Image 1 (cartoon, rainbow, N blue to C red):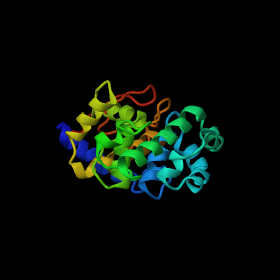
Image 2: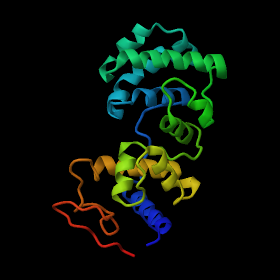
Image 3: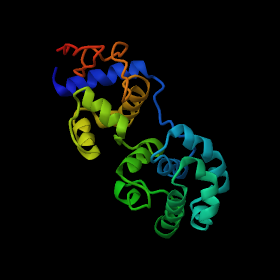
Image 4: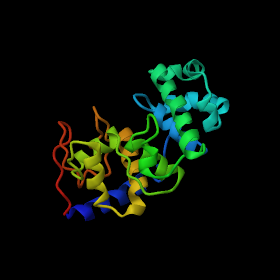
Length: 218
């Protein structure tokens, strides 16, 4: 099966399997999503969602972060770990937004990645989910699942992103990322993938001790 066709087939199966796939960080605007994604580094979305209601209530605007006392933010986000460094990033984020972007979250990747704590993955998450602009964000789940499915073999997130984007239309990029993440969290987990129960076992070359290499349905 040609790679592009395989990717389209996999996307169709994942669409049917996870019709509710979405960004699992809670947010109501671009600033909240940017902040939540910065906070999600080295922790889970579930834990981030537990602290952001209080954070968003205390700091609803970019200028609020810009003028905040770092220790006050630390107190709110402490359960996430790395509170001192994350709090400093949020203050810096607010200052950069106020100073360079009139307090508004920008839309371009170049502008987004100029913000403290915002790398390419975060920029793509914000573009795709807050602004509806195509972006295939690659996290550890996407990288792992794409590799196991034989869709991408790149050693870096950027290489994996380019490989996947070449196989799917732009309109599918954002949601395909969510679908791979859902699959990676619910089925194709890092330590114990449920290969026997996987809806993609007919096209997946990944072997396990309990489920041998599947035949490619080409």
